[in-house]
Image 1 (spheres, rainbow, N blue to C red):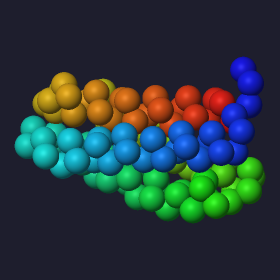
Image 2: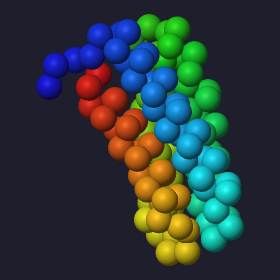
Image 3: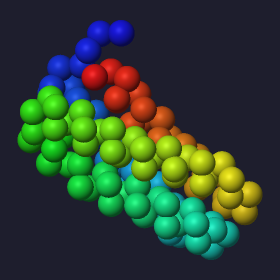
Image 4: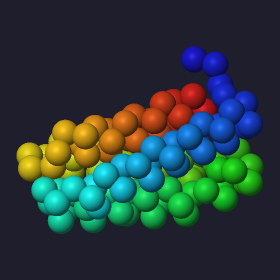
Length: 109
């Protein structure tokens, strides 16, 4: 796989941030989502916001480290979404989509 240019990493991260925001909004609006899922996705969102400057303004090393941290939070969110049998399907899918997006971004770096 060809490595992404820095500008492409930034662009894809910004797209991922939108997916992360949608996942958070979906989870928080889902009255059937478990408190665990809500908390884990909120942490995923916090890590995403924290990583913003490292990815958009930092060097390649800072960007890589920030994305690793976000992906780890995303892994937890994915597990929580898959385990929450009461969350609506669109909620679960929003979390899974955000997780996949950050994984693909990391794989391209």
